[in-house]
Length: 300
Image (tube, rainbow, N blue to C red; front, side, top):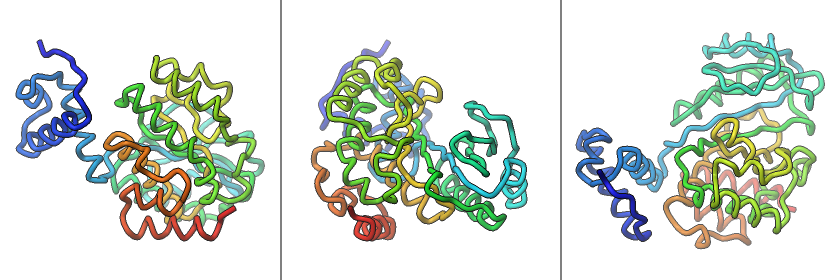
C-alpha cells in the first residue's frame, strides 16, 4: 500500500514530470501509480499538473451566458441549428450533458444559456459557435447581463483552491481594468474585502468541501458556494458578451491562473500591474496581447 507524504515543491514538480513522461510512454494511471509508489488518483493529478505547466487546456470548464432578445426556446433552436445539442428547460441549477436555455430572474426579456461541461480547444471552439449562433439569431447583451465561468475544482487540494481564490480576489482592481465599468463591484459580482478573502482562504484550507459555508452570498466576483453544488469555482465578474474572441480570452486567462497557481508561487506574478500580471500567466501571445489591450482601453 503506497504511503502519502507531502513532497517539497521542487520534488513535487519532478514527480509531476516523471508521471507525465510515463503517461506519454502509454502507461495507465494504475501502472504509473505502481511505478511511483503512489495512489492512481495522485498519479492522475501529477499528470494534469505537468500538462498545466505546459499551458495546455486540460481543466474542464463551463460558461453561463446571459442575454436579451431571445426566449429559451428560440435560443435552443439557434444552437441546434449551429450543430450543438441544446434544449430549453425550466429554471434549474442542474448540470446537463447539453446546452440548456432557461429563464433567469436577473435578465428581463431574455434568458440564460448554460453550457455542458467543456474541455480543451474543442470546448473553447464550442463557446465561439454558440455565441455566433445566438448573436446571428438576434440576441443582444446590455449592462444587466453577465458571463460566468466555472472551473472544475474537484482535483484541487484545499490549499490550491484557497490560492486560486486568493490570486483573483487579491487582484480585483487589476481585473476591474479588463471588464466593463458596469461590472466593477456589480450587485451580482460584488468585490470581497480583505477580511473576507482571508476568512474564505482559511476555510478552504481547513475543509474545501465546506468552504461554501464561509461565504454569505454567491453574488461576488468569485463564488465559492458553487463548489458544494457543482464541484467548481465560479468567476462571475465578466460582463455579458456574445463575442467569442472576448469570451474565450477570458476563459483562457482563468484556466491559466489555475495552471500557474498549481505550478508556481503566485506571489511571483504581479498584483499591481495588469500587463505584467497577464505576461506572468504564460498565455498564448495573441491572447495576452488582446487582454492587455483591453486592460489599457478599459483602465479605471
